Structures are given as C-alpha cells and as structure tokens.
Length: 223
Image (cartoon, rainbow, N blue to C red; front, side, top):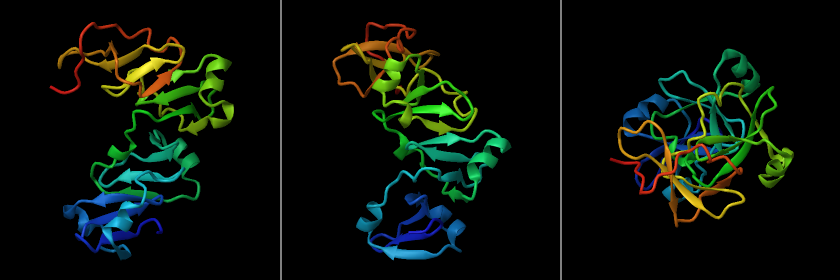
C-alpha cells in the first residue's frame, strides 16, 4: 500500500497509517489529522500482516514534533542537522506518523547491527540500544564483516553509550558468562551487571562489558 494511505479495519474500525510499507496505529483522538488521506478498508488480519518496521531509508517524524529519523538496519536514527537531512532526504518524503507508541516495535534486545556514522571510520556494534566499538578485524568478521556495515547519520550516535536498555542479557563473544544489565535501585545513576543463568539476548565484543561494575545481587528496572 502506498505511503500516506490509511488502513481502516473492517472488524473494529481501528486506523493505521502506512509509512515505508509499515503500519502505524492512529489513536482515535488523531483520526482527524489524517482525514484527507486515501482510506482503504481491510480485515484486521490483513492489516496485522503488515510489518511494523519500515523499509530501509524511510524518513519518519512524529506528528507535532520536529525531530526527523531515518530507518536503517531495523532501527531508527535521529538526523541531527540540516546538512544531514539534505543528505538523507534525497527524493524521499518525510512521513508524519501518529503521536503514539511508535518506538515499541523497534525494541528488540536480540537484534544487532554494525553501524558507522557517515563520513567517519569507526565501526560500532549496535545492540539493545548501546554501541560497542569494533577495534579489530576479528570482531568485525565475527559480527558480519565490512560488507554488512550500515551507514547512519553523522552525529546520531553522540548520545548513545555502552549502557544497553535495562534488563538486557549480554555476554562477551569469547565467554559463556551471561550478565544481566540493570540498576541497584531507583536512585542509581549508572548501570551494573550481574551474572545470570538466563540465555543471552546477544553477544558483544570481548572487553565491551569490562567497564560495567559487577553487582552480586539481582538488579532492577522497574520500581
């Protein structure tokens, strides 16, 4: 279905915007914002078959905000400057998606991708919301090789640290020890790691978790 179309469920009257071939739920309070769009009625099961992750290069902007993101490698990356927007927009349109929990489908603790900011040389492994520098050819080959590196906007990784999303289970690639990443309590300002018997969501380069302090007890993410 073309971008900008609205899908109307014949089962429950729910509405979804199509952007980059993906569906974005439109809350009832925002139906009027898309009243001028071409609407196509479909069974809910058909709508559910649409992916929630837009295709590569899709530009998205949440209604009522100015931040524009580009979808690369099943993740969304902030375009931090007009110069970068001029590079990334090319012929593409910016899709104004609904103001809702659109980030949810992108949260996948197991998904990992090699990324490199445009016009730079440093390659990172991005996984569970964290970046880990690739410092040797062995790691580069292990995580997919140079041909799998995806370019992202210059400056988009500035606010990304080595701390993953809370409750991620990670292991360094040459080790069988799995660590759960979280916080000691609600007033903690830095993340800790704790050995866990749970399976790893993903592996990371050797040494990537060395700087995270070890904690002997269970860690928390919700208080």
